[in-house]
Length: 331
Image (tube, rainbow, N blue to C red; front, side, top):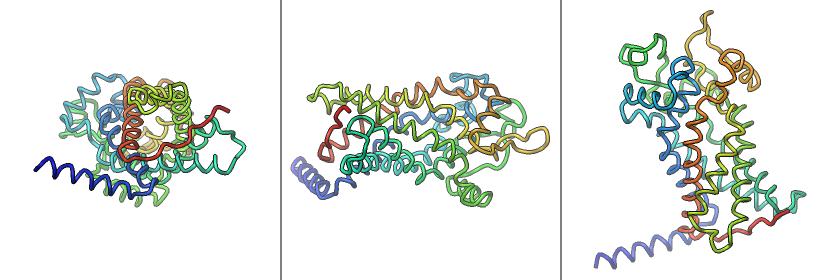
């Protein structure tokens, strides 16, 4: 009886799924893929942000000691501080990213633009999709970084560490971050750091889809829907794309938490005028190695993150019965 009811419910769900338009299914698949991937690597993402932004406190600790310090100060849940904002952001971000990629790709092919029909189409469509998703969800990324930057403090700095580690303002949640950011700088305050983000996401997103699709082309047709194929292809795509654009990610994170940084000797906050000024100032005052702070943990994080994202996305597409699209042909 129970089995029969379960089968009926499952059939009803699939009937409802079949009535959804393809774009809606793609949005759902992308959103689920992003949420699962982000949550899986949330502890590593928290440590990466701290290594990128808390230059005076985490720079000499390294990954393992940073993990211990966060556990000591914030407890196990500290590894997920800011993950709520990250998931709230990543669901629409990933949904828009994957969905607009399919839309832009189909539009390019249908309009016979002078890009051929090979992997260059994936590069251009992926870049445009990344830019679109960033513009629509950036304030939530700002909130995620500011929340992750905070380390609990019981009257002592950094659990007994150096003074000046933790300074006001502190945020209780996403709403407070966005409200204060808007009060401080209006709409521009909500998009502080968008410059390096866009400069970085365009090549990163494009390369990610380009490399992923290029690797898939070398996989036999009968293995195209295999999770064992999606995982390594997605991992390599994320690895190459992230490495080339990582310094811009460091600049973005530091711009996002400028108002939380310790005061300089003249009593002011360091503020970067633009992306180039940020890169130049970081090299001059913190050393060129800071542009790659957290890169090792990013390698650990990005491989499973992108791999899980692509694998879940492809699995969701299969479950939602999204029809396979036309494969790009080599140029």
